[in-house]
Length: 337
Ligand SMILES: Nc1ncnc2[nH]cnc12
Ligand SMILES: [Zn+2]
Image (cartoon, rainbow, N blue to C red; front, side, top):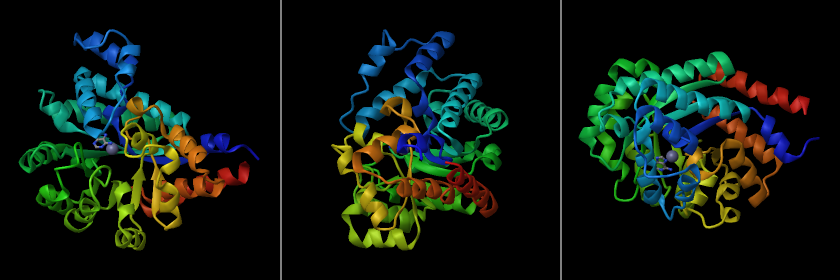
């Protein structure tokens, strides 16, 4: 028997909620700034880390979008992605479905293809060298309008055979899912999978809109669903996967203490919870740090942790055969430890 931390380290898992721009570590920010001749408003890595004290989502987003300005070339996006996969592989992540925010880049003149080709090259290399498979999800920025989302979907057309789905992120409150109903319908007609951030800061009504109007396949965060009994029952009945991000929730003051995190209640109520890092460079931890910090704070059992890892493969945008193969990796691990 190993202790729970060691058990989590080796447990095969998927990561389903990771913004690749949020994996930009301060050291990389300086390296990319230097090689691209971009100036950044920080004198040192320590100064950058000290700036990562957030009171809410918007506080974080302001600094996150500013940080992304150092990303300029296909090589930057490749290097960013490959560095994430190296850290993920060290956490026994076997499969990752990564978000990217094309509008953050196209709006400052970086062509869609520079971003997508760089990320896809990093993903291909991760599969070849690290054995970590992955899929790419294009997120629309919800603080921008729906026409801009349509333009982004149009720009993505040549890459859509390599993009598994679309998501919805950025400032939630004031930008309900209903704002994007038509572009999500179009994406669904194009055969794309659908996700949306919902109930991170926004009310249960936004979660309902994501289900009823966007008709999502997977929900990102979903915390505030727990304020609504009927919604909890519905999410359980529909077997909706929730990609929950404990350290993000703590850093963005969605919870004041990890001890109060809703995951134990979500699990008790039969919700399909997964654990993820969201923006690990900004929130102080990669996926295993999230498993460990939450397990310690709320007292998750080994069985809970295995349930969550199984959910991560079951909720992935993989075929049934691929899911079965990944779930068998968990069984093999359990037989070994
Ligand atoms: N946690 C988060 N919520 C909304 N938008 C984001 N973009 C990157 N991280 C995000
Ligand atoms: Zn997120």
